[in-house]
Amino acid sequence: MAKLFGFSIDDSDKTPDSVVSPVPRSNEDGVDYFVQSGFYGQYVDIEGVYRTEYDLIKRYREMALHPECDGAIEDVVNEGIVSDLYDSPVEIELSNVNATDKLKDRIREEFTHIKEMMDFDKKSHEIFKNWYVDGRLYYIKVIDTKRPQDGIQEIRYVDPMKIKFVRQEKKTNNKGNLPLDPLAEGGIKKAYYPEIDEYYLYTPKPNYPTSMYSTAAGAGGKGQIKIAKDSVCHVTSGLFDRNKGTCLSYLHKAIKALNQLRMIEDSLVIYRLSRAPERRIFYIDVGNLPKIKAEQYLKEVMSRYRNKLVYDANTGEVRDDRKFMSMMEDFWLPRREGGRGTEITTLPGGQNLGELTDIEYFQKKLYRALGVPESRIASDGGFNLGRSSEILRDELKFAKFVGRLRKRFSNLFNNLLKTQLILKNIITPEDWDSLSDHIQYDFLYDNQFAELKESELMNERLGTLATIEPYIGKYYSNHYVRTKILRQTDQEIEEQDELIKKEIKDGTIPDPSAIDPITGQPLEGGDQDLGAVPTDEDPDDAASKLTDAEFQKDVKSAEI
Image 1: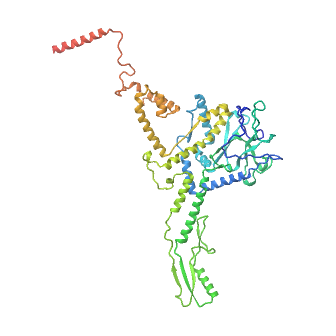
Image 2 (image 1 turned 180 degrees about the vertical axis):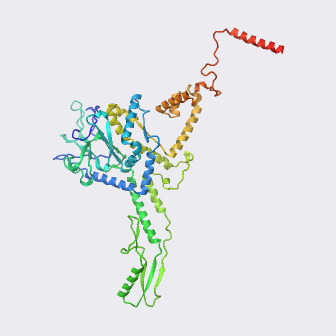
Protein backbone atom coordinates (compact mmCIF):
# COMPACT_ATOMS: atom_id res chain seq x y z
CA MET A 1 0.00 0.00 0.00
CA ALA A 2 2.96 2.28 0.33
CA LYS A 3 3.10 2.83 -3.40
CA LEU A 4 -0.57 3.70 -3.66
CA PHE A 5 -2.01 7.16 -3.36
CA GLY A 6 -4.34 7.63 -0.41
CA PHE A 7 -4.74 5.76 2.83
CA SER A 8 -5.63 2.29 4.03
CA ILE A 9 -7.52 1.06 7.09
CA ASP A 10 -6.09 -2.20 8.42
CA ASP A 11 -8.19 -4.66 10.37
CA SER A 12 -6.28 -5.89 13.40
CA ASP A 13 -8.53 -8.94 13.69
CA LYS A 14 -6.67 -11.14 11.26
CA THR A 15 -7.86 -14.57 10.29
CA PRO A 16 -5.63 -17.20 11.92
CA ASP A 17 -3.51 -19.46 9.74
CA SER A 18 -5.52 -22.50 10.80
CA VAL A 19 -8.69 -21.07 9.16
CA VAL A 20 -8.14 -21.92 5.52
CA SER A 21 -10.11 -22.31 2.32
CA PRO A 22 -9.10 -22.89 -1.29
CA VAL A 23 -11.86 -20.51 -2.45
CA PRO A 24 -11.26 -16.74 -2.23
CA ARG A 25 -13.84 -14.38 -0.77
CA SER A 26 -16.79 -13.47 -2.93
CA ASN A 27 -17.02 -9.76 -3.69
CA GLU A 28 -20.36 -8.60 -5.02
CA ASP A 29 -19.09 -5.60 -6.92
CA GLY A 30 -19.01 -6.83 -10.50
CA VAL A 31 -15.21 -7.12 -10.58
CA ASP A 32 -14.55 -10.83 -10.91
CA TYR A 33 -11.56 -10.81 -13.22
CA PHE A 34 -7.98 -11.10 -12.07
CA VAL A 35 -4.94 -9.49 -13.60
CA GLN A 36 -2.17 -11.95 -14.33
CA SER A 37 1.50 -11.42 -13.64
CA GLY A 38 3.82 -11.08 -16.59
CA PHE A 39 7.45 -12.03 -17.08
CA TYR A 40 8.73 -8.48 -17.49
CA GLY A 41 6.42 -6.99 -14.92
CA GLN A 42 2.79 -6.64 -14.25
CA TYR A 43 0.72 -6.44 -17.39
CA VAL A 44 -2.69 -4.91 -16.83
CA ASP A 45 -5.02 -6.37 -19.43
CA ILE A 46 -8.47 -4.93 -18.74
CA GLU A 47 -8.85 -3.08 -22.00
CA GLY A 48 -11.84 -5.07 -23.15
CA VAL A 49 -13.66 -4.78 -19.84
CA TYR A 50 -13.02 -1.07 -19.56
CA ARG A 51 -14.08 -0.45 -23.11
CA THR A 52 -17.35 -2.23 -22.37
CA GLU A 53 -18.00 -0.19 -19.24
CA TYR A 54 -17.06 3.03 -21.00
CA ASP A 55 -19.51 2.31 -23.80
CA LEU A 56 -22.21 1.22 -21.38
CA ILE A 57 -22.03 4.40 -19.30
CA LYS A 58 -22.04 6.51 -22.47
CA ARG A 59 -25.12 4.65 -23.73
CA TYR A 60 -26.92 5.01 -20.39
CA ARG A 61 -26.39 8.76 -20.41
CA GLU A 62 -27.67 9.02 -23.98
CA MET A 63 -30.76 7.06 -22.95
CA ALA A 64 -31.41 9.47 -20.07
CA LEU A 65 -31.70 12.33 -22.59
CA HIS A 66 -34.70 10.73 -24.29
CA PRO A 67 -37.91 12.39 -23.01
CA GLU A 68 -39.80 9.13 -22.40
CA CYS A 69 -36.91 7.53 -20.56
CA ASP A 70 -36.17 10.71 -18.60
CA GLY A 71 -39.79 10.84 -17.42
CA ALA A 72 -39.54 7.32 -16.03
CA ILE A 73 -36.17 8.09 -14.40
CA GLU A 74 -37.61 11.19 -12.75
CA ASP A 75 -40.49 9.10 -11.34
CA VAL A 76 -38.00 6.72 -9.75
CA VAL A 77 -35.71 9.47 -8.40
CA ASN A 78 -38.62 11.53 -7.05
CA GLU A 79 -39.88 8.51 -5.12
CA GLY A 80 -36.43 7.58 -3.87
CA ILE A 81 -35.38 11.09 -2.78
CA VAL A 82 -38.09 13.29 -1.32
CA SER A 83 -37.21 16.95 -0.95
CA ASP A 84 -38.79 18.72 1.98
CA LEU A 85 -38.58 22.29 3.12
CA TYR A 86 -37.76 21.47 6.73
CA ASP A 87 -36.54 17.85 6.93
CA SER A 88 -33.45 16.21 5.50
CA PRO A 89 -34.04 13.59 2.78
CA VAL A 90 -32.38 10.91 4.94
CA GLU A 91 -31.68 10.45 8.64
CA ILE A 92 -29.80 7.75 10.51
CA GLU A 93 -31.74 5.32 12.71
CA LEU A 94 -29.85 3.78 15.64
CA SER A 95 -32.67 2.32 17.75
CA ASN A 96 -31.52 -1.26 17.03
CA VAL A 97 -27.85 -0.53 17.73
CA ASN A 98 -26.51 -1.98 20.98
CA ALA A 99 -24.42 0.97 22.11
CA THR A 100 -24.38 3.74 24.70
CA ASP A 101 -26.33 6.94 24.19
CA LYS A 102 -23.06 8.88 24.04
CA LEU A 103 -21.78 6.72 21.18
CA LYS A 104 -25.09 7.05 19.34
CA ASP A 105 -24.92 10.83 19.63
CA ARG A 106 -21.38 10.81 18.22
CA ILE A 107 -22.49 8.65 15.29
CA ARG A 108 -25.40 11.01 14.57
CA GLU A 109 -23.05 14.01 14.68
CA GLU A 110 -20.60 12.42 12.25
CA PHE A 111 -23.41 11.41 9.91
CA THR A 112 -24.70 14.98 9.86
CA HIS A 113 -21.15 16.21 9.19
CA ILE A 114 -20.82 13.81 6.24
CA LYS A 115 -24.06 15.08 4.74
CA GLU A 116 -22.84 18.65 5.13
CA MET A 117 -19.55 17.86 3.34
CA MET A 118 -21.51 16.29 0.45
CA ASP A 119 -24.13 19.05 0.56
CA PHE A 120 -26.55 16.16 0.40
CA ASP A 121 -29.66 18.08 1.40
CA LYS A 122 -29.34 20.24 -1.73
CA LYS A 123 -27.74 17.79 -4.17
CA SER A 124 -29.52 14.59 -3.12
CA HIS A 125 -31.67 14.45 -6.26
CA GLU A 126 -28.64 14.90 -8.53
CA ILE A 127 -26.53 12.33 -6.63
CA PHE A 128 -29.25 9.68 -6.66
CA LYS A 129 -29.97 10.26 -10.35
CA ASN A 130 -26.29 9.96 -11.32
CA TRP A 131 -26.07 6.70 -9.40
CA TYR A 132 -29.28 5.35 -10.94
CA VAL A 133 -28.34 6.24 -14.52
CA ASP A 134 -24.66 5.25 -14.46
CA GLY A 135 -25.17 2.21 -12.23
CA ARG A 136 -22.14 3.20 -10.14
CA LEU A 137 -20.94 6.06 -7.96
CA TYR A 138 -17.42 7.07 -6.95
CA TYR A 139 -16.26 9.52 -4.29
CA ILE A 140 -12.71 10.37 -3.22
CA LYS A 141 -12.25 10.71 0.55
CA VAL A 142 -9.70 13.48 1.15
CA ILE A 143 -7.91 13.44 4.53
CA ASP A 144 -5.00 15.24 6.15
CA THR A 145 -2.19 12.67 5.96
CA LYS A 146 -0.36 14.35 8.83
CA ARG A 147 -3.45 14.36 11.04
CA PRO A 148 -5.67 11.43 9.98
CA GLN A 149 -7.43 11.54 13.36
CA ASP A 150 -9.25 14.68 12.16
CA GLY A 151 -11.28 12.47 9.82
CA ILE A 152 -12.43 13.17 6.29
CA GLN A 153 -11.78 16.75 5.23
CA GLU A 154 -13.52 16.71 1.85
CA ILE A 155 -15.61 14.35 -0.29
CA ARG A 156 -15.14 14.79 -4.05
CA TYR A 157 -17.22 13.25 -6.81
CA VAL A 158 -15.38 11.28 -9.53
CA ASP A 159 -16.77 10.64 -12.98
CA PRO A 160 -17.16 6.84 -13.44
CA MET A 161 -15.56 7.19 -16.89
CA LYS A 162 -12.32 8.30 -15.24
CA ILE A 163 -11.87 5.61 -12.59
CA LYS A 164 -11.84 1.83 -12.55
CA PHE A 165 -11.64 -0.76 -9.78
CA VAL A 166 -8.95 -3.39 -10.39
CA ARG A 167 -8.04 -6.66 -8.72
CA GLN A 168 -4.50 -7.67 -9.45
CA GLU A 169 -2.84 -10.95 -8.65
CA LYS A 170 0.28 -10.69 -6.52
CA LYS A 171 3.41 -12.27 -7.84
CA THR A 172 4.22 -15.21 -5.55
CA ASN A 173 6.58 -18.16 -5.58
CA ASN A 174 3.88 -20.71 -4.84
CA LYS A 175 4.09 -23.83 -6.95
CA GLY A 176 0.53 -24.71 -7.85
CA ASN A 177 -2.73 -23.53 -6.43
CA LEU A 178 -3.89 -26.67 -4.64
CA PRO A 179 -4.15 -26.69 -0.83
CA LEU A 180 -1.73 -28.76 1.18
CA ASP A 181 -2.55 -31.79 3.30
CA PRO A 182 -4.46 -30.61 6.39
CA LEU A 183 -2.52 -33.03 8.59
CA ALA A 184 0.87 -31.88 7.35
CA GLU A 185 3.05 -29.24 9.00
CA GLY A 186 1.63 -29.71 12.44
CA GLY A 187 -1.98 -29.48 11.35
CA ILE A 188 -1.58 -26.05 9.75
CA LYS A 189 -2.57 -25.80 6.14
CA LYS A 190 -2.46 -22.85 3.80
CA ALA A 191 -4.61 -22.50 0.74
CA TYR A 192 -2.54 -21.22 -2.13
CA TYR A 193 -5.18 -19.40 -4.07
CA PRO A 194 -3.82 -16.19 -5.63
CA GLU A 195 -3.31 -13.24 -3.31
CA ILE A 196 -5.05 -10.19 -4.68
CA ASP A 197 -4.19 -6.50 -4.56
CA GLU A 198 -7.22 -4.24 -4.83
CA TYR A 199 -6.90 -0.65 -5.95
CA TYR A 200 -8.42 1.98 -8.20
CA LEU A 201 -6.95 3.36 -11.41
CA TYR A 202 -7.74 7.01 -12.06
CA THR A 203 -7.15 8.81 -15.34
CA PRO A 204 -7.97 12.53 -15.61
CA LYS A 205 -8.62 12.40 -19.39
CA PRO A 206 -10.68 9.38 -20.45
CA ASN A 207 -10.44 10.18 -24.16
CA TYR A 208 -8.83 6.95 -25.17
CA PRO A 209 -10.60 4.04 -23.52
CA THR A 210 -9.31 1.50 -26.01
CA SER A 211 -5.71 1.83 -24.88
CA MET A 212 -6.20 3.43 -21.51
CA TYR A 213 -4.70 0.77 -19.26
CA SER A 214 -2.88 -1.57 -21.57
CA THR A 215 0.55 -0.66 -20.35
CA ALA A 216 3.33 -2.54 -18.68
CA ALA A 217 4.01 -1.42 -15.13
CA GLY A 218 0.34 -0.81 -14.34
CA ALA A 219 0.58 2.79 -13.22
CA GLY A 220 2.39 5.77 -14.53
CA GLY A 221 1.55 5.25 -18.18
CA LYS A 222 -0.74 7.75 -19.85
CA GLY A 223 -1.14 9.59 -16.57
CA GLN A 224 -3.15 7.01 -14.61
CA ILE A 225 -2.80 6.98 -10.83
CA LYS A 226 -3.14 4.07 -8.42
CA ILE A 227 -5.41 4.91 -5.50
CA ALA A 228 -5.79 2.82 -2.36
CA LYS A 229 -9.07 0.99 -1.92
CA ASP A 230 -10.06 2.69 1.34
CA SER A 231 -9.56 6.16 -0.17
CA VAL A 232 -12.47 5.69 -2.58
CA CYS A 233 -16.15 5.27 -1.81
CA HIS A 234 -17.63 2.95 -4.44
CA VAL A 235 -21.36 2.19 -4.66
CA THR A 236 -22.78 -0.08 -7.37
CA SER A 237 -26.33 -0.66 -8.52
CA GLY A 238 -26.38 -4.32 -7.47
CA LEU A 239 -27.01 -5.54 -11.06
CA PHE A 240 -24.18 -7.50 -12.67
CA ASP A 241 -23.58 -9.34 -15.88
CA ARG A 242 -22.36 -12.66 -14.52
CA ASN A 243 -20.95 -13.76 -17.83
CA LYS A 244 -18.74 -10.70 -18.31
CA GLY A 245 -18.42 -9.58 -14.70
CA THR A 246 -19.59 -6.05 -15.54
CA CYS A 247 -21.72 -3.81 -13.37
CA LEU A 248 -24.95 -2.76 -15.09
CA SER A 249 -27.39 0.08 -14.65
CA TYR A 250 -31.13 -0.29 -14.12
CA LEU A 251 -31.50 1.27 -17.58
CA HIS A 252 -29.84 -1.72 -19.21
CA LYS A 253 -33.07 -3.70 -19.51
CA ALA A 254 -34.69 -0.82 -21.38
CA ILE A 255 -32.08 -0.47 -24.16
CA LYS A 256 -34.01 -2.60 -26.65
CA ALA A 257 -37.40 -1.13 -25.69
CA LEU A 258 -36.12 2.43 -26.11
CA ASN A 259 -34.54 1.70 -29.51
CA GLN A 260 -37.78 0.12 -30.69
CA LEU A 261 -39.76 3.12 -29.49
CA ARG A 262 -37.41 5.50 -31.32
CA MET A 263 -37.66 3.52 -34.56
CA ILE A 264 -41.44 3.23 -34.46
CA GLU A 265 -41.81 6.95 -33.73
CA ASP A 266 -39.53 7.94 -36.61
CA SER A 267 -41.24 5.55 -39.00
CA LEU A 268 -44.64 6.82 -37.88
CA VAL A 269 -43.64 10.40 -38.60
CA ILE A 270 -42.29 9.48 -42.03
CA TYR A 271 -45.41 7.46 -42.83
CA ARG A 272 -47.76 10.24 -41.83
CA LEU A 273 -45.83 12.86 -43.73
CA SER A 274 -45.83 10.69 -46.81
CA ARG A 275 -49.44 9.60 -46.58
CA ALA A 276 -51.06 12.68 -45.15
CA PRO A 277 -50.96 14.96 -48.24
CA GLU A 278 -53.01 14.28 -51.28
CA ARG A 279 -50.60 13.60 -54.12
CA ARG A 280 -51.38 14.57 -57.68
CA ILE A 281 -50.86 12.84 -61.00
CA PHE A 282 -50.01 15.21 -63.89
CA TYR A 283 -50.72 13.91 -67.39
CA ILE A 284 -48.73 16.22 -69.70
CA ASP A 285 -49.69 16.35 -73.31
CA VAL A 286 -46.47 16.12 -75.36
CA GLY A 287 -48.23 15.84 -78.75
CA ASN A 288 -46.14 14.01 -81.34
CA LEU A 289 -42.75 15.24 -80.09
CA PRO A 290 -39.83 12.84 -80.33
CA LYS A 291 -38.96 10.84 -77.23
CA ILE A 292 -35.93 12.92 -76.22
CA LYS A 293 -37.69 16.27 -76.71
CA ALA A 294 -40.78 14.91 -74.91
CA GLU A 295 -38.71 13.96 -71.88
CA GLN A 296 -36.99 17.35 -71.89
CA TYR A 297 -40.34 19.13 -72.10
CA LEU A 298 -41.68 17.01 -69.21
CA LYS A 299 -38.66 17.86 -67.03
CA GLU A 300 -39.12 21.57 -67.68
CA VAL A 301 -42.74 21.39 -66.53
CA MET A 302 -41.76 19.37 -63.46
CA SER A 303 -39.05 21.80 -62.35
CA ARG A 304 -41.49 24.63 -62.80
CA TYR A 305 -44.27 23.32 -60.60
CA ARG A 306 -43.04 20.64 -58.24
CA ASN A 307 -41.84 21.12 -54.64
CA LYS A 308 -39.46 18.92 -52.68
CA LEU A 309 -40.30 18.28 -49.03
CA VAL A 310 -37.61 16.29 -47.18
CA TYR A 311 -37.92 14.98 -43.61
CA ASP A 312 -34.77 14.89 -41.44
CA ALA A 313 -35.07 12.10 -38.83
CA ASN A 314 -32.28 13.52 -36.64
CA THR A 315 -33.72 16.98 -36.14
CA GLY A 316 -37.39 16.40 -37.02
CA GLU A 317 -37.33 19.25 -39.53
CA VAL A 318 -39.21 19.39 -42.82
CA ARG A 319 -37.57 21.51 -45.51
CA ASP A 320 -38.12 22.27 -49.19
CA ASP A 321 -35.16 20.83 -50.99
CA ARG A 322 -35.20 20.35 -54.76
CA LYS A 323 -31.93 18.41 -54.86
CA PHE A 324 -33.30 15.25 -53.27
CA MET A 325 -35.97 12.83 -54.28
CA SER A 326 -38.71 12.25 -51.74
CA MET A 327 -41.71 10.02 -51.26
CA MET A 328 -44.06 12.98 -51.34
CA GLU A 329 -43.49 14.19 -54.87
CA ASP A 330 -46.23 14.19 -57.44
CA PHE A 331 -46.37 11.87 -60.41
CA TRP A 332 -45.64 13.28 -63.90
CA LEU A 333 -46.67 11.15 -66.83
CA PRO A 334 -46.44 12.04 -70.57
CA ARG A 335 -49.45 11.60 -72.81
CA ARG A 336 -49.27 11.33 -76.60
CA GLU A 337 -51.42 13.02 -79.17
CA GLY A 338 -54.86 11.51 -79.47
CA GLY A 339 -55.42 11.33 -75.77
CA ARG A 340 -57.43 13.60 -73.57
CA GLY A 341 -54.73 16.21 -73.33
CA THR A 342 -53.20 17.63 -70.12
CA GLU A 343 -55.00 16.30 -67.02
CA ILE A 344 -54.44 16.43 -63.23
CA THR A 345 -55.74 13.63 -60.99
CA THR A 346 -55.62 13.63 -57.17
CA LEU A 347 -54.72 10.55 -55.06
CA PRO A 348 -56.36 10.45 -51.61
CA GLY A 349 -54.17 10.52 -48.48
CA GLY A 350 -53.98 7.97 -45.68
CA GLN A 351 -57.18 7.17 -43.80
CA ASN A 352 -55.95 5.66 -40.47
CA LEU A 353 -53.42 8.30 -39.49
CA GLY A 354 -54.76 8.72 -35.93
CA GLU A 355 -53.88 5.18 -34.84
CA LEU A 356 -51.44 5.20 -31.91
CA THR A 357 -51.79 1.66 -30.57
CA ASP A 358 -48.26 0.65 -31.54
CA ILE A 359 -46.76 3.77 -29.96
CA GLU A 360 -48.64 3.16 -26.71
CA TYR A 361 -47.55 -0.47 -26.69
CA PHE A 362 -43.86 0.38 -26.90
CA GLN A 363 -44.25 3.14 -24.31
CA LYS A 364 -45.75 0.65 -21.87
CA LYS A 365 -43.00 -1.79 -22.73
CA LEU A 366 -40.38 0.86 -21.93
CA TYR A 367 -41.97 1.68 -18.58
CA ARG A 368 -42.23 -2.01 -17.70
CA ALA A 369 -38.56 -2.45 -18.51
CA LEU A 370 -37.70 0.46 -16.20
CA GLY A 371 -39.90 -0.86 -13.38
CA VAL A 372 -42.29 2.13 -13.43
CA PRO A 373 -46.09 1.51 -13.35
CA GLU A 374 -47.76 1.92 -16.72
CA SER A 375 -50.48 4.08 -15.20
CA ARG A 376 -47.94 6.88 -14.79
CA ILE A 377 -47.55 7.32 -18.55
CA ALA A 378 -50.81 9.24 -18.96
CA SER A 379 -50.17 12.84 -18.12
CA ASP A 380 -53.85 13.58 -17.65
CA GLY A 381 -54.42 10.60 -15.38
CA GLY A 382 -55.94 11.61 -12.08
CA PHE A 383 -55.30 10.22 -8.65
CA ASN A 384 -57.99 8.60 -6.56
CA LEU A 385 -57.30 8.53 -2.86
CA GLY A 386 -59.47 5.60 -1.84
CA ARG A 387 -58.83 2.69 0.45
CA SER A 388 -55.62 0.73 0.41
CA SER A 389 -57.47 -2.28 -0.97
CA GLU A 390 -57.94 -0.28 -4.20
CA ILE A 391 -54.21 0.24 -4.72
CA LEU A 392 -52.87 -1.27 -7.90
CA ARG A 393 -50.40 -4.10 -7.61
CA ASP A 394 -47.99 -2.18 -9.87
CA GLU A 395 -47.77 0.63 -7.35
CA LEU A 396 -47.01 -1.80 -4.54
CA LYS A 397 -44.28 -3.41 -6.65
CA PHE A 398 -42.92 0.03 -7.47
CA ALA A 399 -42.83 1.01 -3.79
CA LYS A 400 -40.87 -2.16 -2.98
CA PHE A 401 -38.52 -1.48 -5.91
CA VAL A 402 -37.80 2.03 -4.61
CA GLY A 403 -37.19 0.55 -1.15
CA ARG A 404 -34.56 -1.82 -2.59
CA LEU A 405 -32.92 1.10 -4.39
CA ARG A 406 -32.71 3.04 -1.14
CA LYS A 407 -31.23 0.04 0.63
CA ARG A 408 -28.53 -0.27 -2.01
CA PHE A 409 -27.88 3.47 -2.11
CA SER A 410 -27.36 3.47 1.68
CA ASN A 411 -24.00 1.74 1.13
CA LEU A 412 -22.73 5.24 0.28
CA PHE A 413 -23.38 6.44 3.82
CA ASN A 414 -22.12 3.20 5.33
CA ASN A 415 -18.78 3.50 3.57
CA LEU A 416 -18.23 7.16 4.45
CA LEU A 417 -19.43 6.73 8.03
CA LYS A 418 -17.15 3.75 8.60
CA THR A 419 -14.10 5.70 7.45
CA GLN A 420 -15.03 8.76 9.51
CA LEU A 421 -15.64 6.85 12.75
CA ILE A 422 -12.49 4.75 12.47
CA LEU A 423 -10.23 7.68 11.58
CA LYS A 424 -11.51 9.69 14.55
CA ASN A 425 -10.97 6.70 16.86
CA ILE A 426 -14.63 6.68 17.85
CA ILE A 427 -14.86 2.96 17.11
CA THR A 428 -12.51 0.21 15.94
CA PRO A 429 -12.85 -1.76 12.69
CA GLU A 430 -13.96 -4.75 14.75
CA ASP A 431 -16.71 -2.68 16.41
CA TRP A 432 -17.96 -1.51 13.03
CA ASP A 433 -18.53 -5.08 11.88
CA SER A 434 -20.98 -5.60 14.74
CA LEU A 435 -22.64 -2.16 14.50
CA SER A 436 -23.07 -1.85 10.74
CA ASP A 437 -25.68 -4.61 10.52
CA HIS A 438 -28.02 -2.70 12.84
CA ILE A 439 -27.59 0.81 11.43
CA GLN A 440 -30.61 1.85 9.37
CA TYR A 441 -31.27 4.94 7.26
CA ASP A 442 -34.69 6.57 7.35
CA PHE A 443 -35.63 8.20 4.04
CA LEU A 444 -38.51 10.64 3.70
CA TYR A 445 -41.46 9.02 2.00
CA ASP A 446 -43.82 10.82 -0.34
CA ASN A 447 -45.70 7.92 -1.87
CA GLN A 448 -49.41 8.62 -1.53
CA PHE A 449 -50.21 4.94 -1.50
CA ALA A 450 -47.79 4.37 1.34
CA GLU A 451 -49.41 7.22 3.29
CA LEU A 452 -52.85 5.71 2.76
CA LYS A 453 -51.60 2.31 3.86
CA GLU A 454 -49.91 3.84 6.93
CA SER A 455 -53.14 5.66 7.87
CA GLU A 456 -55.14 2.46 7.79
CA LEU A 457 -52.47 0.64 9.77
CA MET A 458 -52.57 3.37 12.42
CA ASN A 459 -56.35 3.02 12.71
CA GLU A 460 -55.98 -0.72 13.15
CA ARG A 461 -53.28 -0.24 15.80
CA LEU A 462 -55.40 2.22 17.76
CA GLY A 463 -58.35 -0.20 17.61
CA THR A 464 -56.14 -2.99 18.93
CA LEU A 465 -54.87 -0.64 21.64
CA ALA A 466 -58.42 0.12 22.80
CA THR A 467 -59.12 -3.61 23.01
CA ILE A 468 -55.96 -4.48 24.96
CA GLU A 469 -56.00 -1.43 27.28
CA PRO A 470 -57.88 -3.18 30.19
CA TYR A 471 -55.15 -5.81 30.27
CA ILE A 472 -52.21 -3.36 30.50
CA GLY A 473 -50.51 -3.95 33.82
CA LYS A 474 -52.10 -7.38 34.20
CA TYR A 475 -50.88 -9.36 31.20
CA TYR A 476 -49.00 -6.77 29.12
CA SER A 477 -46.50 -4.12 30.07
CA ASN A 478 -46.70 -0.54 28.85
CA HIS A 479 -43.38 -0.90 26.99
CA TYR A 480 -44.63 -4.03 25.21
CA VAL A 481 -47.76 -2.25 24.01
CA ARG A 482 -45.78 0.73 22.71
CA THR A 483 -43.19 -1.37 20.87
CA LYS A 484 -45.32 -4.26 19.57
CA ILE A 485 -48.77 -2.71 19.11
CA LEU A 486 -47.96 0.93 18.28
CA ARG A 487 -44.62 -0.03 16.64
CA GLN A 488 -42.70 2.80 18.28
CA THR A 489 -38.90 2.69 18.31
CA ASP A 490 -36.84 3.42 21.41
CA GLN A 491 -35.96 6.85 20.08
CA GLU A 492 -39.62 7.64 19.35
CA ILE A 493 -40.65 6.50 22.84
CA GLU A 494 -38.01 8.74 24.41
CA GLU A 495 -39.01 11.71 22.25
CA GLN A 496 -42.73 11.26 22.94
CA ASP A 497 -42.18 11.00 26.71
CA GLU A 498 -40.18 14.23 26.73
CA LEU A 499 -42.81 16.02 24.64
CA ILE A 500 -45.63 14.82 26.91
CA LYS A 501 -43.79 16.08 30.02
CA LYS A 502 -43.16 19.43 28.35
CA GLU A 503 -46.79 19.83 27.25
CA ILE A 504 -48.08 18.93 30.73
CA LYS A 505 -45.75 21.50 32.25
CA ASP A 506 -46.85 24.15 29.75
CA GLY A 507 -50.50 23.35 30.37
CA THR A 508 -51.14 22.29 26.76
CA ILE A 509 -52.55 18.95 27.89
CA PRO A 510 -53.92 18.05 31.37
CA ASP A 511 -52.01 15.91 33.84
CA PRO A 512 -53.39 12.34 33.68
CA SER A 513 -52.85 11.93 37.47
CA ALA A 514 -55.24 14.84 38.14
CA ILE A 515 -58.11 13.39 36.06
CA ASP A 516 -60.75 10.98 37.34
CA PRO A 517 -60.41 7.85 35.12
CA ILE A 518 -64.14 7.11 35.46
CA THR A 519 -65.76 10.48 34.87
CA GLY A 520 -62.91 12.14 32.98
CA GLN A 521 -63.32 15.29 35.12
CA PRO A 522 -60.49 17.04 37.01
CA LEU A 523 -60.10 15.95 40.61
CA GLU A 524 -60.72 18.48 43.42
CA GLY A 525 -57.75 19.36 45.47
CA GLY A 526 -55.21 18.55 42.84
CA ASP A 527 -52.77 15.96 44.11
CA GLN A 528 -54.53 15.38 47.46
CA ASP A 529 -55.57 11.83 48.23
CA LEU A 530 -59.30 11.24 48.31
CA GLY A 531 -60.98 9.35 51.09
CA ALA A 532 -58.22 9.93 53.67
CA VAL A 533 -59.33 9.02 57.16
CA PRO A 534 -58.26 11.41 59.95
CA THR A 535 -56.08 9.73 62.52
CA ASP A 536 -56.17 12.27 65.34
CA GLU A 537 -59.85 11.85 66.15
CA ASP A 538 -61.78 8.95 67.58
CA PRO A 539 -64.37 7.42 65.23
CA ASP A 540 -66.96 7.50 68.03
CA ASP A 541 -66.39 11.23 68.54
CA ALA A 542 -66.92 11.87 64.82
CA ALA A 543 -70.12 9.89 64.93
CA SER A 544 -71.31 11.75 68.08
CA LYS A 545 -70.58 15.14 66.44
CA LEU A 546 -72.55 14.11 63.41
CA THR A 547 -75.42 13.00 65.64
CA ASP A 548 -75.43 16.32 67.55
CA ALA A 549 -75.55 18.30 64.35
CA GLU A 550 -78.46 16.30 63.11
CA PHE A 551 -80.26 16.74 66.47
CA GLN A 552 -79.85 20.52 66.38
CA LYS A 553 -81.15 20.58 62.82
CA ASP A 554 -84.24 18.62 63.84
CA VAL A 555 -84.90 20.97 66.77
CA LYS A 556 -84.79 24.05 64.57
CA SER A 557 -87.13 22.53 62.06
CA ALA A 558 -89.57 21.60 64.81
CA GLU A 559 -89.55 25.12 66.16
CA ILE A 560 -90.29 26.55 62.79
